[in-house]
Structures are given as C-alpha cells and as structure tokens.
Image (cartoon, rainbow, N blue to C red; front, side, top):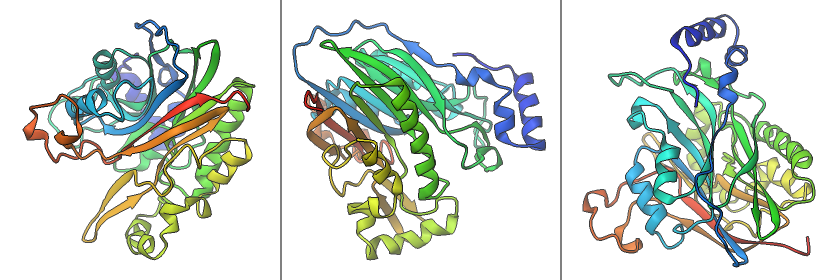
Length: 352
C-alpha cells in the first residue's frame, strides 16, 4: 500500500479547507489502490457449501480477541469467505498495524483491502499515524481476482467532521472460482450520516455496477448497510430513536418498512430474507444517559446462491463459547466490537 507523503496530504487539506473533502480526494489517486495478497492456494474442495462471515470489527482495537473468535468460535471458525468492515491500516490507535495482514496471516487466507478513509487526527494520542488508512476487506481461502474499488456517492463530508478524514464509503468487488463456479463477491459499508433514501442511492450504485461486472454469475453482497431506519446526519435523531425503537419494533424486525434499499435489492433479484436471521441484532450503540440502542445493520444479499443456515454471533468475549481456549481470563466480558458477527452457509443455486 502506498504511504502518502506529508506535503501531498497538506496540499490536499488546503484544497479541502477552500472547497470540499471530495475535491481534495481527487488529488489523491493512491487512495483508490487495492492491496491484494494471494499467498495461499485455493483448497481442493469437494464440498458443496461455503461458510461466509460478515464482521464489522470496529477498527481492530481488540485484534487478539477478534482472531481468537475467528479461529475458535464454532460458527466462525474455518470460514471460506470473510467480509470485513472497519479495518485500520497504519493508525496509531491500533498500534500502526496493518489489521488485514495480521488477520490474514493468522487465518491463512488471501485478502483484498480497500481504503475508505485517510484519518487526519490521532484523537489526542501521543505519536504519529503511519499510512493512516481505514477501510474494508474481503478474505478468502480461494484466489481473489478481477478486483475493483468503487467509490460511492458522497452523502456526508467527513473532512468537516471532528473525526477529520479524506475519503468516501466504498464497495470492493472481486471474483473467486469454486468447483468451476465463478462467484462475485462485494463488500461494502454504507453511510450512517444520511437518510434511508441516501443509503438507497449508494446501494443502487453498487447494484448497477454488479449488473455490468457479474453478469450471469452468483453474487454475494455483504456489509454494514447502516440500516438504522433514521436520519443519521442529525445527532438528535439517535437520542429520539432510543424511545422510538421500543414503540416501533419493526425497526428491527421489518426494517424494509423504513429502509427502501431492502426493497431495491429485492427488485434486482437478491434475497435478503432467507440469507439473514429475521429481527437480528448486529449493533450496540451507547446512548448517553439512556442505555444501549440495538440495531439491525449488517446483511448478506445473495443472488444465485441459496442459504442453508444463518447465525448471529454475539461479540462480547465469552470463553465458554470457544473451542480449545483455556486461558484469556483477562478478556472475559470484553466487547471486542460494537457489532455482532453474522455468518451463513451458502450453496450455488443451480435453479437460479
């Protein structure tokens, strides 16, 4: 991955100060580069099903615990494909590690990493960021090929936020070959600081690109879709939603009533009902003075694939749920991410 020099970053910041973060991003084409690692041979497999996991790991702050869960939790271990959101790459807050590379090495999986944002602050920590990238990744036991990064329409300029950064939400596209079946994979993270209609616009961009790139092959789209059912650009809305979610349980059980992107993916021929646990909780958001707002944000959307089993894994560290882990008492009860992981077993649907 390219490390941008300080002068170029400063020049981009000057442009952003006088115009927008999007115009500054146009001067940083390096941010559209993908890191691709295909160090591991595709398995010789005669199994019909693929285990897929989706996990927003909240930067990778609790990296060791995350790796232990991926290696030892019965629902997560031995995954064939993992879609990751929110991985740091060279950020002081996570010890300047390349989180994707660390996980890839531990799991023995190939990966593609794409940059959503370059972080421009250290949040008061002493020291310096290195690459300062934050993004998404796809990991696979199969070779990953034909990758692209697709930048989604800008709906919130994060350069103007107190968490100052360059970039946009993205989708990573790639293909794998399994038993002579080519499968299209898409990992994305939609905007939280926008309306449900805004997220629909971003999803339509992804679906139209998939029509062009993955014609007549099975497709899995996975990611934190931020289907929070409200306008996340207004801080007051989150406070109001704490009570609204109690009064309107369909915000969890039937978010399609509030989030039009779900009807959109259905109209494009994707399944979201059988590929996910109905009414699942995948995000825990603390609300000051109130408690935890639980939301249903993370999804598999599939076309030409049939889901045989789907599960939600609570990511508050619980040793009793892990196979072969006898120590790590100090990690008991740690929230290793503010998102739960979801996983499913999928098979190519020959009737599709």
